[in-house]
Picture 1 (cartoon, rainbow, N blue to C red):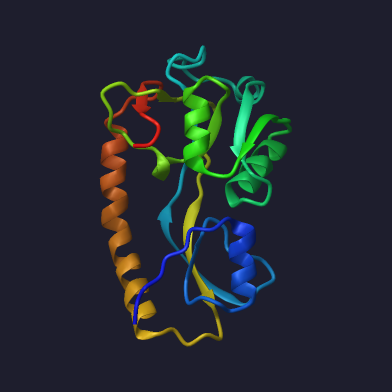
Picture 2 (tube, helix red, strand yellow; picture 1 turned 60 degrees about the horizontal axis):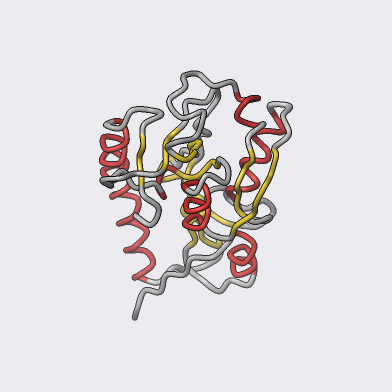
Length: 199
């Protein structure tokens, strides 16, 4: 038996979940209205990013309303990240200036590095390596947004031995993995360059 990994947007993933096509799903937000088991296993902070030469880069304690006035490059409608970002700003009583919608995090990083706008992305898609980094983490009030990755499966489904083994491996490895990411990320000062797109 082989393990197959699919990377899909939330809309397609939830459709597959409703049709009971897979054993396990990893989601930023467990689905509502579906009979599933969901276990939070890894923090998923969403961080504000801009090009390293952006006028907000290096500033401290940037008001959220100031950040909201910047052109935002964001995931497509229906993505979990998009929903979380829109809900966060709505709760703050702020309206986003959405300049561009893109279907992948890599495309968003390229656009932000090119100076087309700012974004909020998962810390996990940001590399800390690079000799000539082009992205900077911004110091914005109220950010990062604190989210969690969840391991989700249909409640009535009997998981295969492989799916059970993978689930156990993921849950036991998450703490070690998160500690490693935290150490690497804390080594980089807020406002300093952190990544070249594609790394």
